[in-house]
Length: 204
Image (cartoon, rainbow, N blue to C red):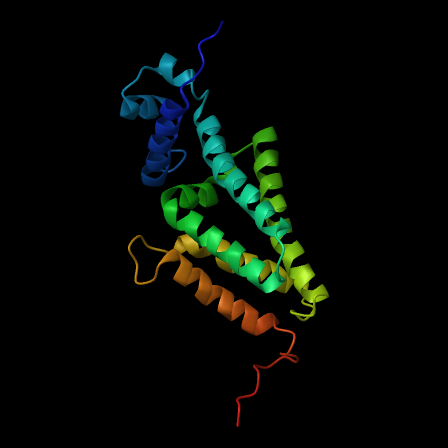
């Protein structure tokens, strides 16, 4: 029987590949560099990943599958949509905060993926965004949120997903505090009691 790949060794290789992609760029990194940094030969490397594109795909897939699964769990929970939105926000920012380098690589190098790999990652992205959209729609149906344009809904998701551009390890705020500030901003804007184009009037 063929020898099974050790998932711990594969995860270590992917972590090394992530750091190399972040430092040198996708085009500046080769499988030989990954193998050398991992302290293994090319033949041993190929037992775990077949190419640097395979490494980029696996890094992307693992991050997104974790988010998709978490998002689906949150969506299935009972409770109001505003609380689900806050849970989605916290889950995403925690994930980004714990995997900052990987998220920066995945975001910057997505277009290097080709064929079925690119389709799979794009579908995972759509699936995860769909969870956010479903929660937003349920909030509107519950009367918690006003009806918003799809462009605004997309902006809400992007505001969260692009925090990898500025989030820092050991920053002033914890990931949950960052998420809560973003979510407070979103809920202030989409709250059903805030109609019109301007901000809510100040209390007298």
